[in-house]
Length: 296
Ligand code: SF4
Image (cartoon, rainbow, N blue to C red; front, side, top):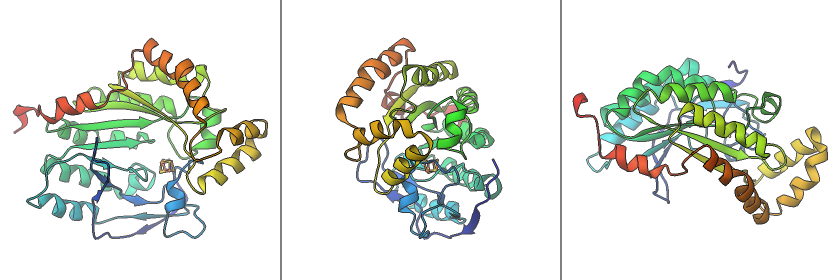
């Protein structure tokens, strides 16, 4: 998808950022600051240190990232822990189509046989399927699509720059032909907008048809200023649902009773019906310890 954002190169001095919680991954790697997918619930927008307006109008690209990463992975102490790629901003946002930072990052991971997790809302990830396939025969690599709804009339309001769900399911189906592990991140489930049985059932059906290894659901969390952005959006676009949403979010997380009911009545029965595992760690254990010997 085209984007009208300004792209500014921002060379970095470090690539990997350690995470406090080491499971399932210990490191974060982000190629961009800012994201042109413009999801209304995005908390990264409000962490953007270079934008006073927090509108992601400028996207900063770490153009030397692969070189810096290569240096860091060469260190003798590197233990080949799993790297989470794009934990803050999407690595396959529109700028990536031109800048092509990810292929270089993947080549570095291949060189150092380093496992990784990629989560994206863009089918641009398909461009790199050969490199991901190669890495998948050396170590664990996970490709997950983050999908909110298959209803395009809603999706276009809430994540206008992302790919549509059906295209993302097709992409997951393609990745299933590689040795990569493949997942659906049904996130975020937005209360009173994308939380109906029918909406989540269409996601589960898509995940089953794509043959994913696991499905992870997650209810929207409203961190910091994201709360105001989402509340304003509901007031403007779905005013009839605003009060219910407001009542559900007294804090950053959704009301506990709401979540319990959602899981008991919708998420868990559907996971069972479509035989969708929530266990992503089994495949990590399998693939981390069983590289394909034919490629060494
Ligand atoms: S894809 Fe992720 S980083 Fe990009 S706007 Fe959406 S939530 Fe934010």
